[in-house]
Length: 117
Image 1 (cartoon, rainbow, N blue to C red):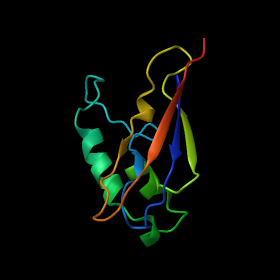
Image 2 (cartoon, one colour; image 1 turned 90 degrees about the vertical axis):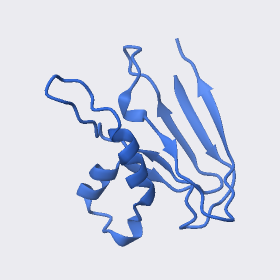
Image 3 (cartoon, rainbow, N blue to C red; image 1 turned 135 degrees about the vertical axis):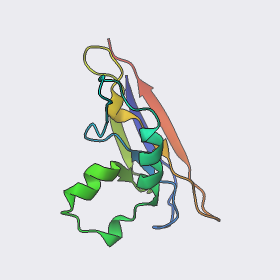
């Protein structure tokens, strides 16, 4: 399954509404038994929403790895991601969410799901 997310409106630069992928680059932590630590994605999602890339160098890969991927809504922008691995298993790296909008902002988006066999 693939997802295409279409942004149908603009949001001010600091207006929130970002789409975040906190596990981008498999930013996943496991306990000593090899089990994923639950709740980490919630913390990472909130930190990713609060992170302002304008305050950091574009070459600062440590910050990107720490907070995952953050996409600013912009009219006409489209993102594509695959929800599953070729094996048919869910891809843990595509966990994503939407950040809250700041007061007075509106965000419109549409999803399209594509199944291939």
